[in-house]
Image 1 (cartoon, rainbow, N blue to C red):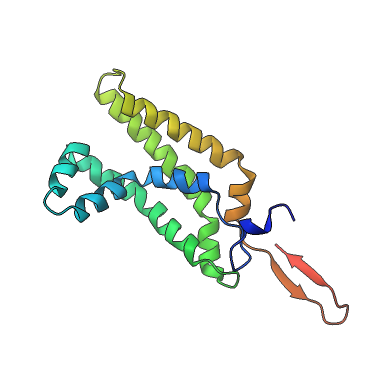
Image 2: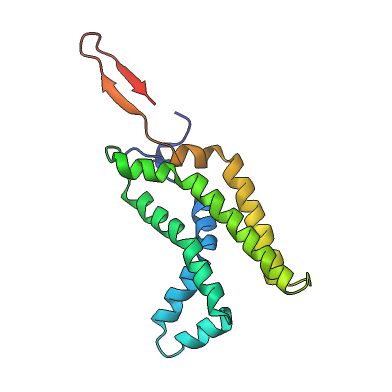
Length: 165
């Protein structure tokens, strides 16, 4: 066994690491701002205007974050016998990498709009997105936690189990 027993959920599936959840939370930051603005009724439009003065950028952020929001929801629905859900979760790593690439391009576009002047929010965003992309590519735990679970079947005449990938 490669991982400690605490790192598995009640269905025997490896839980995604905390760094992956934090990276996903960063990718869906437009959704977080949108929900916070919706929860604070009178101040909601002021919050949206402050964080996203151009509403087009909010809509782009919501569109780019939607696959991650759905993927995070599906991770919570996983069971060892749920083939469709597990298949969709197994696609989450390449989808996340694609979203990171799109957000890198989007942030580069925003930097270009400001004529390549330095700004802390854009710099931090670019560094965090680059770090998260490297983490996604290199992390064995991310690969294992989002992989399709192995099927275990019993062979009746020989009495042992075989793992099918």
